[in-house]
Image 1: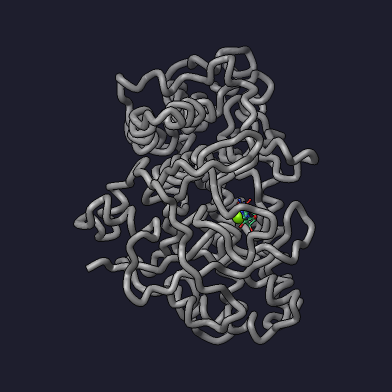
Image 2: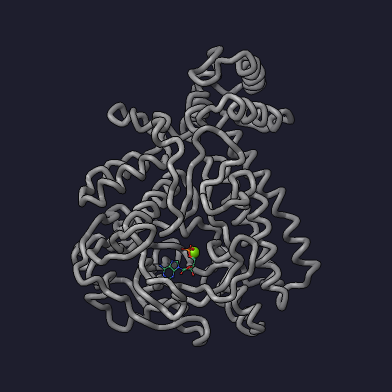
Length: 474
Ligand code: AMP
Ligand code: MG
């Protein structure tokens, strides 16, 4: 028995989606399967080939109601009326111990929402999405995850011709801020209510049914979003396309496009080369998160008064700041919070910026600075003076150094997914060699572990990769 069942979303009124099947590849091939996730979902007894056939649509599960969702959204600050799953398909869901898990296909062919698109995704982009989901998951950041990549010999045209591929991914939900905006801007407040009720009913661990349930629903989305973005900032993750149609109502990172992890620390880092204004620059992400929440609030204005919206939106900043402060405290190895911490953290970030230090490695090697006068990275006069204040701050806590270093090593990854690493495995995969993809996944799956054989993965990017331009087409 395959435990994938029709998604509850298929019970919603017809305007919410289009029922349809996957457009199969003629010659599908298995690029990679996520055996860990398969096991977590109780799918381990299903053979690879069987699962591939189901995702490719060459074999079907009875009574399943795959659907493409209708949504709209704000893209780069502008409202776009017609979005929706132009190449995505919500296949069904699995009941897990933690609640519903969506099974979604990306690149499953044309839908009524495809506009001028071909409904496909390219191998390069689905590999990047697969990698980042696993990397974020290993860093304990809420994220969609991939179950499988199916390759093909179908040619699609982007900047050049490439082969199409499909990503089977899981997420707690595929309901985006944009699903609410779609009904709000189409003057369908009754459907905004239906959708809010659907969320409150189907995601009980996130939303309570008590009085003021719509306010509480919005409060919870705002809180999850603020926490998720604090986690992005702490690990140096830049999403690249924070449009409201890419924002999950359950605060999971998803729809990975031209993302990047900060290497040389630069707050104005923009990973998306089409983002000429730098709207989604690394340093803007916290503010954009709030902007997106207020766009959602606006879409909920038939359910929540403006005063309540404002009150709830006002909580965003302190939730974000407190979460980020907590994460930074762990990265610095502090057990308790002290007044001077914010200044100390800013001091370190300023040094990293002016000395162009690698964000991940500086934090990872900071454990040395608890007891020594310098580290590989921190060796300038300004840095030495910072280390002195840092050690004085540590001396205000009585916990054993060894305990603090354990905390630091569990919060400062040794390995981060650098763009050039993804690029190398993509080039190999485009030549049908998937072995380096498997190795990279092994590395990013255990980001905090010291593994001698993988030492080179902890190095800064080579010079050729410093200005690597990641194509935004996908
Ligand atoms: P994304 O940039 O992947 O978040 O996509 C933004 C919007 O464009 C969504 O509505 C997608 O479904 C749609 N889209 C992106 N690529 C394609 C494609 N190749 N074919 C059809 N629709 C697409
Ligand atoms: Mg999207």
